Length: 170
Image 1 (tube, one colour):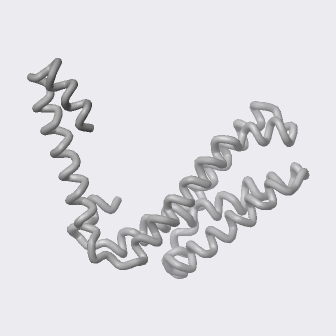
Image 2: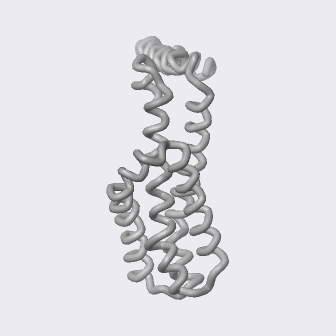
C-alpha cells in the first residue's frame, strides 16, 4: 500500500525503490496472466469454480477426518491415522485404475459420477454410526469420488485453455 511505501521510502530509501519495482513487476505478470485467459470458454471458469469447491471439501474433510474417526466413532488414534493413510493411498490407486474409464466417459460425465460418489460417501459417513459402513465408504466410494474430481478437472482445464494461457491456467 501507499503507506508502506512512504514509510519504507522515509526510513530505508535505498530499499523502497527496488522493493516497489519488484512488487510492480509481480503485479504486472499476474495481470498479464489473467489477460491471457480472456476469450476462454465459460467452461473454463466453471472448471475453476468446481476445482475450488472440490479442493475445499477435500482439504476440509482431511483436516477433521481423523478427529471424527477417533472422537465420534471410537477408533484409536493409530486406527484413525491408518484409515486416513489408506484413504489417501486408495485415491491414488483408484486414480490409476479408472484412467480408461475417464477416457471413455469424458470429462463431464466423469465429474458428475465423481461428485455424486463423493456426495453419497460424505452423506453416509456423516449420518451413519456403523463402523462397517464407514469402512465401505472410506475404502470404496469416497476415494473413487475423489479420484474423479481434481485430476479430471485438471484435464478439463487443459482442454479449455489455449497454448498462450496454459502456463498461467494451471
